[in-house]
Length: 212
Ligand SMILES: [Zn+2]
Image (tube, rainbow, N blue to C red):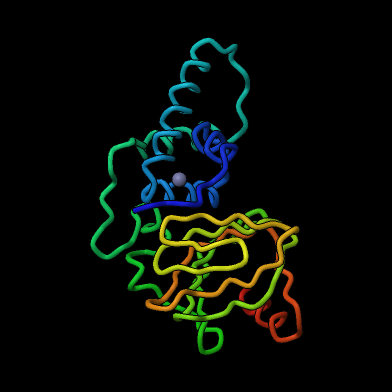
C-alpha cells in the first residue's frame, strides 16, 4: 500500500506524547494501521519522549493525562506490518463501530451520500462518511479543521487524489469539492473541529442534517 498523504509531524509528536484528543488519536491510530512510515515515526518519537521523561523534573499532570498515557500503553505501536482484518475494519475503529464497517447503520443523505455519527466531544465531531462511486459532496470550506482518513475506495479534489490510508487536512483556507472515485463506495473517517461552510442553500441544509 502506497500512502501519499500523511498526518503532519506535529500530529505525530502530539500522538506519540499522548497529547492528542480522543478524536485525533482515533484518526492517528487508524492511519497507523495503514502506514509503516508513520508507525516508525511514532515509535521514534515515543522512544525520544521516554528518554526525556527519565531526565525530566516531575510536573503536575492534568487530569486524565495519566489515564490517557496508560491507555496508550495498551496499544503498542511498532513498525512491523499490522495485518488489516479480512473485513477491512481497522482495529482501532472497532470499539467505536461496535463491530465491523460492513455492519454499521448508515444514515442516508440523498441518493449518493451517507454517514454514521461516532461521537462528538468538546466541539470535535467524529463520523464515518460514505459516498457512492462518483458522488460529489458539494463545494465547502471550514470554520475549523477537517481531517479525513480514507478507509475504503478513494476521492479526489483540487488538492489531489486520496486512497485508503491517506489523510487530508483542510482548514478555513480551502474551498474544496471532494468527489468519490468510480469503482467502489468511498468510506472515510472524518474529524471536524467546527461546522463546515457550504455554498448554497441545499448544502446548508445537508450540513445541518450531517450535524457538522
Ligand atoms: Zn503515514
